[in-house]
Image 1 (cartoon, one colour):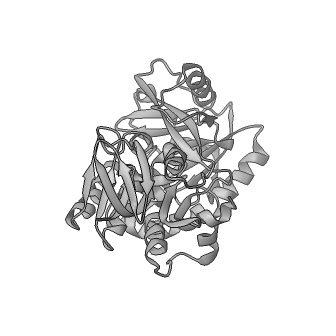
Image 2: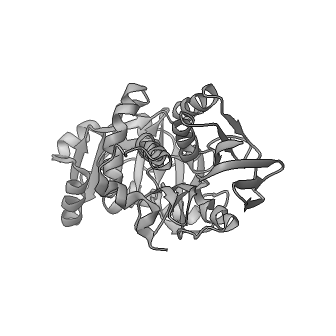
Image 3: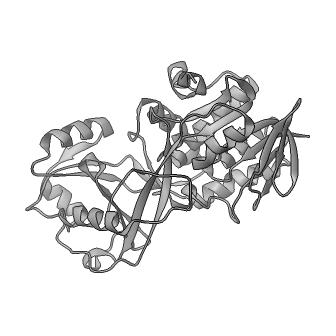
Length: 355
């Protein structure tokens, strides 16, 4: 008998599985051919402590020690960029992100392609980092296997039933005391199969393009650029630049792909703030960022059946919150006292949803 059967092999499922593998036998089921295939494999791979609502910021703060200890972080920095007519929005967002305002000349010394004719405001944070997402996924997977657990791919869930324990059918049959729902955009489909009230998950598409280094610049020391009101971002990546329109278009669970028109609009917003035009898009893709109505994660046992455990609604915060979020799920699932403050715990558990 499995103690914890986890549906979903992205960062939510693997991090939760690693934590729970200290308390019992874990099996992770992934529907695709590879781990982290959907959202986890298409992440911006950034840690920014000030990014997200209050409960997410609490998870960020609680996660940074783990990320640093395991050397998953590389300094990147984050620059908030505002147009000349965006003063009020810029100041509000800068305060929320905890970034400090700098002069335009200082901003241009860091990113020489910023356009002085259009950029009116800039602010910087050195407390933002690239995350080695692949190594992080594999690190959690190693913990599961080291503790005697297993990780299986090509295991799409077909049916879920329950007697005195859960019975999950894929191409095989699995019996488990506890069922962990970490299925990303598909979490409500898994809940429906299990007869558990859904949480109202909505997947939102976000597209991204890879372009050559603007003007042939060396991008290694450039920070991530974020447009005010999160209307675009640009992030150095392996000598290229990733540019996203930061769209949040509601959709259905599927293997997402970029919308060409939305991508073009985002590239135009980026181009308006720089002196180097986009002459070529090398490749593009999209991912799904899944949220519930209040925009924060859903973690822990369901109030209607505590043997059904949520690790869901990571939105755009999955990797940066995973260490603390997975620990909270494990604490709540095993009856341990949460290490997170109680206000944050209440803001994250499914009990708050009042279904």
